[in-house]
Amino acid sequence: MNIVIVLPYLKAGGTERQASYIANFLKEKGHMVTVVSIERNNTFQGLFKVPVEYLNSSNRSLYLLKNTTLLADKLSNIKADVVLSRAWSVNMVTERSARKLKIPSVLYLSGSMNLSGHSFVKKMIHRRTLDNGSAIISVSAKAKQNCIKWLKTDGSKISVVHNGIDIDWVKEKAEGSEDLPNKLLDSPTPKLVFVGRLIHRKGLDLLLDAIHEISCDGKIVELIVVGDGEEKSAYINMAVKLGISEQIYFAGEQKNPFPFMQMADIFVLPSRSEGFPNVLPEAMALGLPVVASNCESGPDEILNGKNGLLAEPSSSQSLKEEIEKLLRSDSYRRKIAEEGFKTVKKYFQLNDQLQKIERVLISARYV
Image (cartoon, rainbow, N blue to C red):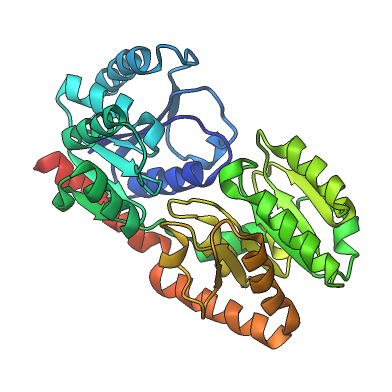
């Protein structure tokens, strides 16, 4: 098959990493694969072992109209048999372009799809897009349930395929040659690590509050923050106001975050909402005990209290309490970490998930 994978951009993130896994796997299976990015941002281009092309579009006011035309022309030139959209932001563009050319489209649901409070018009637009798609892949069971609940989508066309983890690759990358700061390497203080975009949804403010409260209890921890985003300055200022700036290291965006993760004692994901957070099983694959907010969809499909701890969503106090459970006992941390690794090895192996995706694409092509 001639498969095209459409992405909004190639910035460093979980969506882009998963897209590279899919593209490279499909190529190895003998398919022709091309990745098309709406915007020209090639941070992650080196991960792809297939051709990468760009629409070079940045006109937000005519995003749907302009990009539908550009993508349809690109798909026609490539002679695509099936097109896969790997992010919700380009699902509408992908579906309309594919329908124009009468080729099947497979659309990803990467978020929680909780549309409570959204307008009737927005729900109708979402519903029409998904109804017209040939098949849908949801990264979590909860997202599928919400899609059926809020959009009345045909559940039989939605396949739940969790993001997979290549354990050996993650471990190899964790041994990378990144220049880790001596300030952290030489410090005996317990270290937490956060990896993600610095935006409100990811909840770093909740973690900073939790660290402040832990400090008030007389326990000092350090936090490594890997990522960048629009809230970075606000979080730096927040750390200063809380008096914990000396405990926080902002590492910025990293193509390879795993060396920073491996040097930590605990991984924390304080998100207010998630789809299926790649970074959780990645941290578990590195043998890190993890704490995550029990936000809707994602974390509770990975963690069960025995292989990782779940805090109440949007609660810095609950986050603090779960972190302190791990800080109090080395043996408890090891136990949680060991169970986490077993979970990833049993349920989230990359190759198993990629085979499911290939089957969805084949079914969409030949239905």
